Image (cartoon, rainbow, N blue to C red; front, side, top):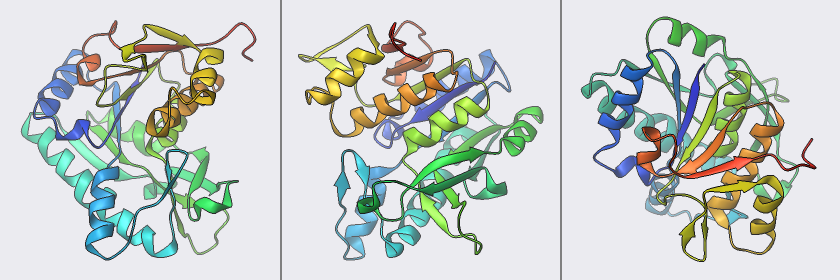
Length: 254
C-alpha cells in the first residue's frame, strides 16, 4: 500500500531529508508519494516582488497576481530543488504539479476571502500510478486546475489539503505530515495520539493554530475519506512508525 508524505517547507531545509526519503523508498519501492509545501519560499518571493503575504486560519490568501508567484516558487523552484536533491541521493524522483494531467481539480474555497484558493474536488491519480509503476517517486507541487474554469485557470491549494486528497484517491495506508515539530504539542509536549474530537478541541481552544490547525483539519478529512492512518511528526517520523502524533477517529466520528 502506498504512503503519502507531505513535507513542509521548513522540513525541506534539513540536510538529512534526501537520505531519509531514500531509505524509506528503498525499504518499499514504488509505494511512496511525496507532496511538498514551500510557504516560506513563496513569502520570500512575494516580498521581493513588493507583495505582502497574508493568511487566514493557517491558509494563504491568494490573489490572481499571487498565483504566478506561487507557481514560480512551488512548481518551479521548490519542486525542482527537492527533486534534484532526491535524485542525487539515488531516488528516481519526478516532479509534477497538481495542474499536470489534471491531477488535482478544485473548486474555489467557500471562504471567498481567501481569493484564488481551492478545495480539492477530484484527484485523477492515473499519472501517479504510471510513475509508481515505472519505478519513479512522484513529488507533487500543490496547485490545482480550477474545475469550474473552461480556460483551465489555476488555484492555489493548501499542501496539507492536497496531500489528504491524494492519499484518499490512492487509498493510501498512511498519510504523514512532516513538520518542524515532533508532533501536536500540548503544553509544549508532543501528544502520542489525538482523536478527532480532541483535535477539534485543540483547534477551538487555540492550542493548535495556524499551520498545525490546517494539518489537523486535513488529517480529519483524510480519515473521513478512508485513509487508514494519519500521523503528524518531524523528519525522523518517516522512518520511525511510532514517532509523532497519531490522529484517530472518535467514537462519534462518521
